[in-house]
Every structure is written in structure tokens, then in C-alpha cells.
Image 1 (tube, helix red, strand yellow):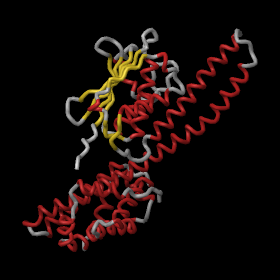
Image 2 (cartoon, helix red, strand yellow; image 1 turned 90 degrees about the horizontal axis):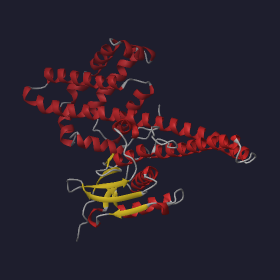
Image 3 (cartoon, one colour; image 1 turned 135 degrees about the vertical axis):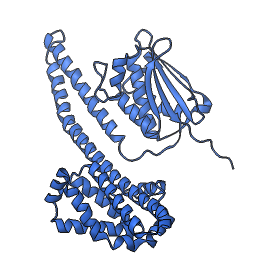
Image 4 (cartoon, helix red, strand yellow; image 1 turned 45 degrees about the horizontal axis):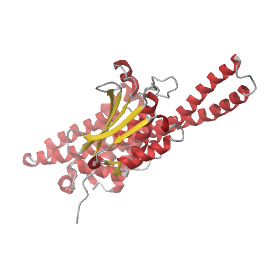
Amino acid sequence: MLDYPMPLDRLRYFQDKVGLADQELALVARHRQVFVVRHQEFGAYFHGYFMGIPRTRLILEQGHPPRKLELVLGHWFARLFSEDFGQGFLQYLWDSGLRHVEVNLDQRYVNLGYTIARQFCHQVTAQEVPLEERQPLLAAIDKMLDFCVLVATDSLISVTARCDRQVIEGIAHQVRNPVTVIGGNIRRLQNQVDRSSPAYKAYQMVLQENMRLERMVQDIGVYNELFRGEPQPQAVDLSLALGAALERLKTTWDLGRFHLRLALDPGLILVQCDARDLETMLRYLLENCLEAADPSDPRVEISTRLAGRDDFVELELFNTGRPPNEEELAGLFTPFSSTKPQGTGFGLPIASLAARRNLGFLSLAGGLHGGTVSLVRLPLAPAPTRD
């Protein structure tokens, strides 16, 4: 069995949002035996349905013997109507979802399975439950099965995302070491030849590409890190976050060469955002502005305004560089896509991901009078309450 801890708080959140409350569970409990006594019939019904689908038949035939599978399915059905959806049963549902991932069962068939379970429940209700009680009971059962689908889907997404992160982490780690070794050896060889020689220029070109690979590995790590855990939104001061991002950039950029202008509205600087995500987003956006600014007029201007509604703010970062055309815009938010010779293709994707994680949005467009505008929309922090 795959080892992935059950996200209890998130599952409880889903349960609340589908409206599966104590009163619905109590209603189902009153009719419990109507369904529990038919658990074996359900096992045979469900098993027979999916044995009729070639792909799922292959999966079922490679697993347990048919009789055992029917017992397992019947046991699930009996527990569905016997449990109070406490932590133990949620763990059972979560483990069931992990098992689907482990046997590589297509999530579409998992969803179909819950649809078949729903049909079976509706048939039983029509046969066994008095007419005046059917509608509220079916609504409660639908909520139970909707919740089960959410748990199974969450299992799939959680495990798949973790596997993807592990693959990316492994690739980045395996690339980092040889890239470092190659860079060191190129520098050593370059130091042994005259600066005016063709060999020196060739080594310099290889070294620049190697340095780009090093930055790319670092950016992949940052991109991957954003997927870890849920964001922790809090009231964050935009001016402080911008200051922290600029301090980080001072280690790699000569900011004195640029004309930086901040025009932040004092009433629009507190945003509801994860502090680390915000600083990461601003650092990459600022670096993108610095790289793109026109060398003959290296200006970067940062301002805020309301986003057309009272609960969002727009942060505008303007630079004097050439605005991207439509073809370039289509790929700028895709990893590894870059219009710059030494670009890694991760700056804007990282910034966009950080914004989306915090209910924000990032767009790029040409300025009204030239230059390029990066526009970030973020939720404003709630006004502080006064006692």
C-alpha cells in the first residue's frame, strides 16, 4: 500500500461543502438495514458490470479471485451504510483511493464505479423505501457518494503530484552535480589559454550555457518547492515584500544601474497572501523586469491600484523593454519557454504559480506608451477589526 498520510482537515472540509452533516447521516442510519442486507448483491452487481469492460476486466482478473473481489466490494458497500463517517472510516476511504492509484486504475473508471453504486442505491430505494421518504434519503445518499468521489480524487491528485515532484527533484539533483563538475573544469581549461585565442571564446560560450543550466536547476527547485504544502495566507505588507525581494536581487544585480520607482498606495499595500510565495513571485517578476528593461532607458516602475472591486488590488510592474508579441505571449508562462538567450524559462511560470496559489492572477501586456507591464491581481487583506 502506498504511504501517504490522510489529510483529515481537507476531507472534513469536503464533507462540509457537500453538505454531509449529522442529519443526513442520521436519515441514512434509519434505513441502514435496507442496504446492508443487500451488500452481497451489490458486490456481484458491481463486479459483473466491470467484468464487462475489457480494460477493467484485465485489472480485475490480475487481482483477487472473483469471489473474493465480490466480498471486498460487498464489504465496502456494507461499511458505507454502517459507519458514521468518523476518522476510522475516512481512513478506510482514503486507503481505498490509494489502492486505486497503486493498481493504476484510471480515475474515470473510479468515477464510473461510484455512478454504478449510485444507480444501485437508487434501485434499492425505489424498491424498499416508502415513496414519501425516498427523495430526502436519495439526496443524503448522493451526498455520501459525492464525498467518496472527492476522497478518491484527492488521493489520486495527492499521490500523483508527489510522484511528479519526486521525479523532478531526482532529475534536478542528478543534473546539479555533473553541471557543477563541468563548470569547474571549463573554468580550469579556460584559465590555461590566452584570452585572445578562439579556444578562450569557445570555453566562454560553453561556460555561459553551463551557468544557464545551473540557474535552470535552481529555478526548477523553486518551482517544485511551491507545490509543497498549502499556502498560509496572512496579511502581508507589499512594500516590505518588495524590499525583501530587492535585497535578494542585490546579490546578482547592480540595481544602481536602474531607475526604480515605487508608487504604492498606502491604502492598498496589505494583501492576503502566503509571505514566502509573495516574496518569491516578486523576486522573479522584478528580475524579469530588470532583464527586459531597455538598456538606454533602464526604468522599472511599481504601483498599486484597486482591481475594479474592493477586495482585490492590482500590482503593476512596468519596464521600458520591448513588449512581447502574441506568439511570444502564448509560451511565456510555460516552463522552459524563454525569449532571452540566457533565460531559463521558469521566471514567469514561477511567478504565475505563486499568484494562482494565493487566489491571484498574473498577466503580461504592452504598456499604453511602450514598454511592458506585468500585472498581478491579489486579494486585499481584511481590514483590521477594532475592539
